[in-house]
Figure 1 (spheres, one colour):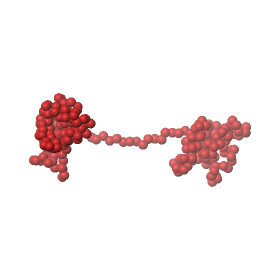
Figure 2: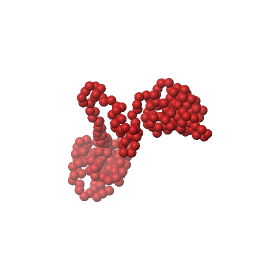
Figure 3: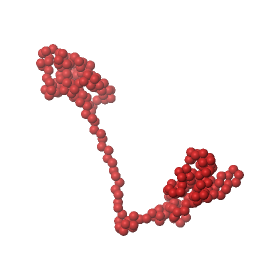
Figure 4: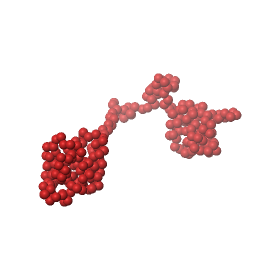
Length: 253
């Protein structure tokens, strides 16, 4: 494979059709760096290009006529040997062999690169080229989207979300799902948690318990004295937190 020959083929945009270019590229894939000694079979070129053998033959005929190719006829079952006729200035070798040296006589790949590549600073008349700093992309961690129901029920029940294990998280997620199905809001959760404390004195206050008894904790359906005593809004939140701080060693549900 000669990369420079294939690059040259890819750059041809005049006097050549798409099919012809594909066929020429397939031949270049088998050539030496100077474009010579390429002898792929018609079947190989047809496989490369997804063209029929007859179409490949027509393309080769046109490439020969247009001067993109010359060939030496093969004898018997031997394929023709093609030469990609690259009529262009000296091409820098792109192949690098073991040790980082080019197999082109007279120097290394770096010497050829220097010979074939103009110095941008010299062309512009500047003594110093422009230094382009590499771009660095810093990906900031995505902040967790606030979940009002999750935050409220865990806070009201005194659960530290950063300390729970996967089993607990699974149970609490199910509880939150049930609360959302019930249309629960953050404010309602604090109020009903306080109702739960009054109605089930001594019982552990957990997100699962609140979800399981949600309909029973509606201040509109509990006893009148409990409704009157049940705080609302910020008072409910404050009382829940104060009651939670006083409770220690409560039995688990």
